[in-house]
Length: 165
Image 1 (tube, rainbow, N blue to C red):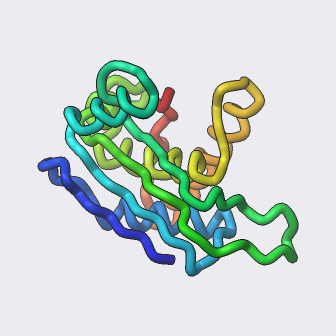
Image 2 (image 1 turned 135 degrees about the horizontal axis):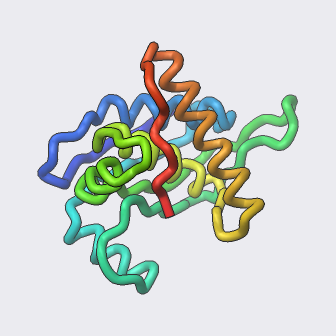
């Protein structure tokens, strides 16, 4: 799996954790090991520009996903996953910090960025949360991936609750 993490935000973030959880999420979703992903960490001004340009919504947001080859997880266990470019995930640590502090289970900016990375991966794979059934499926997968990754690393305490809108 080729995953690049590029921090352009000016904020110190745990880039290794972002890389590790992205790799874990893609493996859990059975994405081809030669697929490529880019994660870009930007400041609030850059995120706001992207949010306005692509979503026509004001202000910065927490995470945006820009799919390339529209890869999807294999539907059957014996199905070979396709190889390709997944796309880009853009994260904003300033928004992540605020969301982590305001969450019901308060958590760090880095924990929120890990959650947002998984959220972004799922969006790249075609998952959405516009409808209640889609939201339940996506957030269920997201929680399972984050909890599994945390368990493998011996992390204790509650997993960050979804704060992604």
